[in-house]
Length: 154
Image 1 (cartoon, one colour):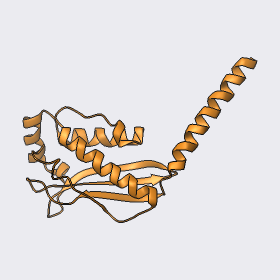
Image 2 (cartoon, rainbow, N blue to C red):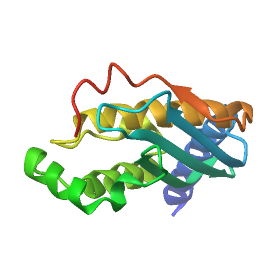
Image 3 (tube, rainbow, N blue to C red):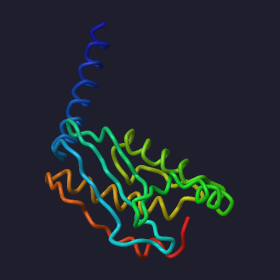
Image 4 (tube, rainbow, N blue to C red):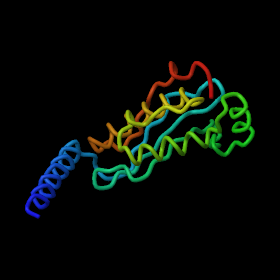
């Protein structure tokens, strides 16, 4: 019984110290956004918005829009064409990447999905920029150069 209490106390101490280290990095509450500097070859501009509460990312939107503001994941023709080319619907990897960021809280921990490699790189760059802004409370949109990332399209 005594060993059980000691083990529980040690596990609690380890958990709390890990939690406080994470909190020490400090993301400020609020919405933070990052977007590509320009449009890719097909006219899409990737963007990400995160919402931080109590030093945790609690909401993520990762998508792209064209110059008219139309959202890529709403474009069914685009979705079908990319599925035929890569074997994956864009909506599938968008949901998976955002879900993993919510669970992992670290863009570097989000694994790449086959057929969505370039979007994965854009995702990591945009998430990193939004998180950097959250750490200092900068509510301006972080602009990220994805041109090298977008030599081909998904």
